[in-house]
Length: 385
Image 1 (cartoon, rainbow, N blue to C red):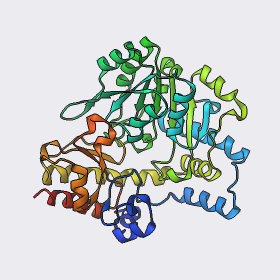
Image 2 (cartoon, rainbow, N blue to C red; image 1 turned 45 degrees about the horizontal axis):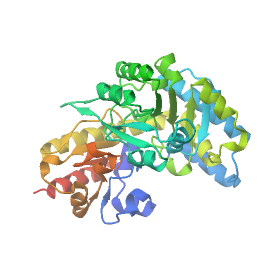
Image 3 (cartoon, rainbow, N blue to C red; image 1 turned 60 degrees about the vertical axis):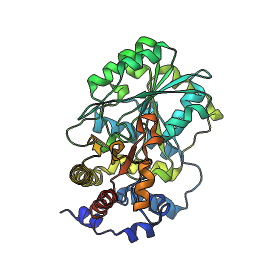
Image 4 (cartoon, rainbow, N blue to C red; image 1 turned 180 degrees about the vertical axis):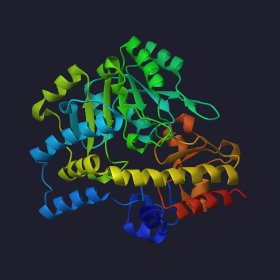
């Protein structure tokens, strides 16, 4: 066992509650397995960058140095990790990935557009289109015994009916699917045929397990590059969501020209601490990230084994990426699986919040110490007896 794994295994529920995260304080009597936070601390390089800025009291606007380096570090990261050769001037900072989607819906879609959302999806994606005056089109993923398939016929039908935007989550939260290059090419063909736009949320990409390979959608070919807005961040893979920094990559020349030509008219700032920690993660976080992925892979195996052994009526497709598992509880006969398990002492995310296709499911966050994860699943199973 590595020193990293031993340190994480030694953490107790009391330790995690004392740390004060949203995940562990919202439901103080339950095991926190809901919001997408990890319990693994910070990468040493990230902690050092954070400490340095706090020591400097650098809490004003981000300096020019960080604004330049976040562009360079992002381009270097996607080149080394995914083979995506990117002009760093195509990288733009944002506070978070959801701001990227808000920008697309505000600036680059006609009013009252139809937005295609493959479901189950990230919870805010269900409500954001309506909040910005657009119309949500849910496109359920097609489930097999071992995988999820994209409904290409449905995608073609909705674009033909007038939809303007596809929100693609790759890797796909909450199902953990990593799309293959062939699947992305098929999606591209449909989008291109109808002149559509794609918002590609790739925030979970660094958390892809061996056996799968993340390929940025915009890097597939010149066609995908021309119709895509990509958003990413170190926030999920390095647990930095509260520091408010993400990256938007504009590979469409028209959108790039719009963005760079607005001066002070676009009020979407990031923070100096967010920029510095994302830079440190991208440049110096590989070793720590490898430790995290190794630990998560063990947790993923444990979830798969224990769900199959202790809750055989619950269906689960092992995720290719992320630290999230979607559990299909429909055969349990529970009116509200989330509330049932919460009463038993495990806080999960309600699959219904992920769209109609998620009803009867719960999302389990397994980025926690393994002994606590085992206890969580055993508690869930015990509540069904």
